[in-house]
Amino acid sequence: MQHHFIANAPARSASERTIPVIDPSDGEPFDAIQRGTADDIDAAVHAARQCLDSVWSRLSAAERGRLLMRLAAKVAEHGEELAAIEQRDCGKPTRQARADAQALVRYFEFYAGACDKLHGETLPYQEGYAVFTWREPHGVTGHVIPWNYPMQIFGRSVGGALAAGNVCVVKPSEDACLSLLRVAQLAAECGFPAGAINIVTGYGHEVGDALARHPGIDHISFTGSPRVGTLIQQAAAERHCPVTLELGGKSPQIVFEDADLEAVLPTVVNAIVQNAGQTCSAGSRLLVQESIYEPLLERLGEAFAALRVGPAGLDLDVGPLIRASQQQRVWDFLSDAQHAGIPMVAQGQVVEEAPQSGFYQAPTLLRDVPVTHRLAQEEVFGPVLAAMPFKDEAHAVQLANATRFGLVTGIWTRDGGRQLRMARHVKSGQVFINNYGAGGGVELPFGGVKSSGYGREKGFEALYGFTTLKTVAIRHG
Ligand code: NAD
Image 1 (cartoon, rainbow, N blue to C red):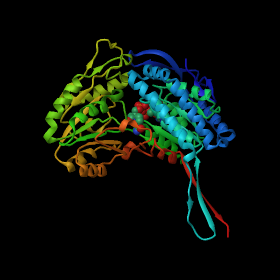
Image 2: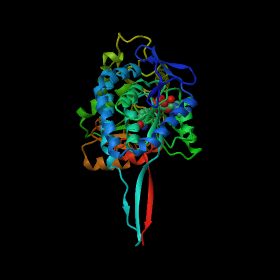
Image 3: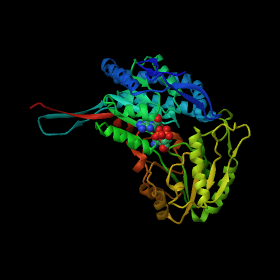
Image 4: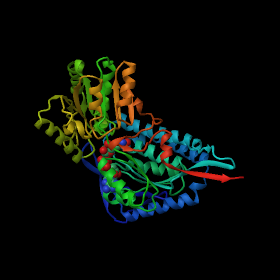
C-alpha cells in the first residue's frame, strides 16, 4: 500500500480510500495508492510553504545545486529499481523504462548545474539611477503529471522548479505514481528538507482540481491532455495564477524525395511505436512526397509487420497500452478508419505469451488518410501511423500545419535551402531535420504552439518560466 509523501513522511489520505494500481501487462491489480482529497492538497501546500519560508529560501543557489546533484547520483544508484517500478506500473519495455530512469538523472544533473547560473541584468537608464532585475522563484509550484513518462516529466518540471528556488506539490497521474513516490523518498534521504517535494496521489477531478484551485499555489505546470489543460487554465484564471501547459500533438514527419530512406525508416517507426505510441511528441502523421510514396510505404509496411508486441518484461518492440479505456480509444479510431474505407498497409503481431487480460494493440500503418479525418487531426495516443502523400513544398507545409496542434515536426531532405524554408514555415515548438527528437536531450527547450500549449520546459529556458522578474530602480543622485 502506497501513501502520499508530505513533509518527507508517508501520509494517509483524509478520505481513507485507495485506488488500485493495475499492471498493464496483465490487467491485474498489484498495489494501491491513496485516493487524495482537497484536504490532503491543503496539507501538502502548507508543508511546502513552511519549507519555503523557513529553509528553502535561505539556501544559496549553490546549495540547491548540490542537493540536486546528490539526488541525481542517488537516482543513478537506484536506476534499476526505479526502472523496474516504472515497467510494472506503466507497462514499459525494459529498455524504455531504463531510458526514463537515465533521463531523470540527466534532468537533475542539468538543473543542479543551472541553479547558480540564473541571474538578472543591469539595465541602462537615466543619469542618477541604477536599475537591475532579480529573477525570483514563484514560491510554491504545483505540478500535474500524466502517466506516459512519469519520471521524465517529473525531472523536467520539478527539477527546473527546484533549481529556480521553488518548492513543489506534485499530483502524478492516478495511473502511474509509484516511481515518483520512490524518487521523493530518495530526495529525503539525500537531505532535501521536509516540504521541498510533496506528492499527493489521486484522481484528477479531485486532487488535480484542488491543486489548480488552491490559493497557496503560485504557479502550475501542467502536462497532459488539451481538455484538462483548459480546465486547469480556467481554475487558475480565477486567481490569475500563471500556468505552463504542455499538451498534446499530432506531429508530422515530412519526407521529401531526396531523403536518406535508410535513416528515415527506423526513425519513423520508432517515433510512433516508442512507448506504444503514448508519447505527446509521437510522429503520428507521415507526409511523403508523391514520387516516393509507394516504395516508402511498401518498406514501412514490412517494418510494421515485423514489430512484436507483448508484456513489458519481455522487452519487445512494443509493450501494452496503459489501461483498458486507452485500448478502447485506439480501437475506436481504427474502427472509424475501417468505416471510412481508409486502407491499412500493415500491422505488427501481439505475441502468444501476452495475457488476454493485458492492454495490447498491434502497431498499425494506415495510408491515404484524408487530412480532415480524425485520424489526421486528433491524438490517438496509440501506435497508429497515418500516412498521406504531398506534391511539393507548399503542399507539405499546408498539410503539416492543418491541425490544431504544433508540438514537433520532422523534416527529411538533403536540400539545405528546403530544410530552412520548411523549418521556418511549419508551426511547431521543435523542428528536427534528418532526425526526430535528437535523442531527447534534456538541454533542448520543449513545448508547443496552438493547442499544444505554451511555455517551455527542459533546457535553461524552463527556468525563466519557473521565475518571475522583479525590476529594482535605485535613484542615487
Ligand atoms: P490527462 O489530461 O487525462 O491527465 C493528466 C493529469 O491531469 C493527470 O495527473 C490527471 O489526473 C490530471 N487531471 C485530470 N483531470 C483533471 C482535472 N479536472 N483537474 C486537474 N487535473 C486533472 O492526460 P493523460 O491521459 O494522463 O496523458 C496523456 C496526454 O498528455 C496526451 O494528450 C499527451 O499528448 C499529453 N502529454 C503532453 C506532453 C507534453 O510535454 N506536451 C507530455 C506527455 C503527455
